[in-house]
Image 1 (cartoon, rainbow, N blue to C red):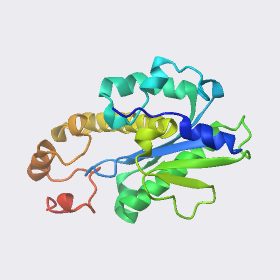
Image 2: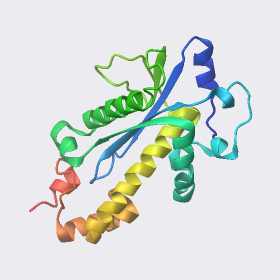
Image 3: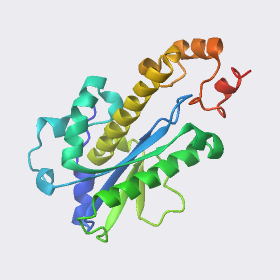
Image 4: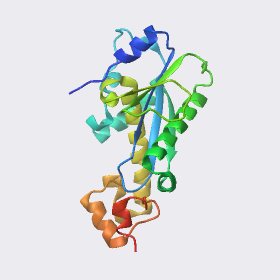
Length: 220
């Protein structure tokens, strides 16, 4: 199992960066619901440069490598130990601009939220954004670095991936209460057999992404 570390953040701090922002999104693939992005920045340097980490900090890794129970247990810990910003683009925006552009919009919104939540800090410090994947946020002025498998390797991106995943899962749990016939609490909007069977039986509901082909096929 690959454990993410703060090694990359430490290298950047040694080069003069003062604010390291990890960012990740969740929800590109589902057929329903929003795409959610999270941006985080570590609150203290106490866990950097070889200092011991708590068991909770050690556990932070790619959200896909954790159980739902583990992610939920880390949610409040991340909020207490990182500055956090969340950005959300709903199904309407996804249908209007496409999922990739909506993901970028959610990321920009998450960074704006993070900057607001760090208002008591000096946002003008030298900063850099670390993104999971191979694409940078287009038309964005802040320095960025895209890192393939960043959510598995870099602690700040891992923390962002967990916070975004829990946030979106909770939203889909609420949607399950509103649209129980689709069982969103189980599959979170992904195209599982249970979901596809429900789509074929009931047709799409309000939060389905009508621009996605499997949903369009089920529209009357």
